[in-house]
Length: 408
Image (cartoon, rainbow, N blue to C red):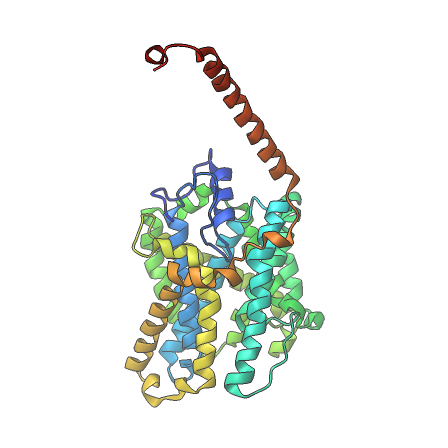
């Protein structure tokens, strides 16, 4: 759900290098944290770190609003508006930084340590929290993602299929077709939360096919100005739609039949929501600062904020803290919004990342074989070092026997 550079996006010449740096040091859809490396670490692009941080704040705030929105039509409208684009934006950026995934051993290793291991840890932690804090026994199931962990499961599947989407001729129409068919197929089931995986798939595939110049287009001043009336209209429409539309469509986790409508409504809603979400995502990105801000470095810790804030919100829910009458008034809703935004910000900071890195970003060198390419590079480096030492040894032999003042 989150290191900066002054440039907005990578230039076309260094696009692949910048992408590799992001793939090594952060997760898109989903992970981003610094790792020590023997090579010099290049600066990261401030725009994308800013976007990830702002998106993860919206994710956390939206989850808090979910506990309060029943008493306020205005808050529910804001909730609907945020849910229309916050995850699509995060997924699109994740797709953009997954372009270099090629199934190589190094990339697969990072896929396991950065997605699979955190998924197992938090997929276990959430049911245990419900069992011991709420008092309601909850089974642990790695096939049925619990609460926020669906995104890790989806990101794992999306990244594994990246080479396929780079191979087909028309990836986005194909992904849209799959999402539309999924929305009309109630028998997919809950395993791996495949409904969400398939219905959100077009945003990831779109990110895979975006280029830096596309992000430069939405950063134009004319787009930033046009985003103001677009968001104003979207908020007004959300307020109108609150009593008229089932908000379950925004979660992308159910088929049309499960939402109580004919099957053909699912594909139609998929197309409509894809267009609305894409428009609002473009407007959101147009407002993201391209320069280094006080929160830019926090973009490297969005995965920490995403996974841990859910534990805190669930604890508050199980303890009925959201039932306090004062929180269901305008001032209470504002206070909760501020508290949640500050909390998720703190969860993205370096101290939290250092404490939790062993479960969110474990190195696990003990679990993997050494990459043959890496071993070859080390041998080549050692051979070059020996070649550099040989001339020095010859110089020393040539100087032996000379007077000290001459040798000096």
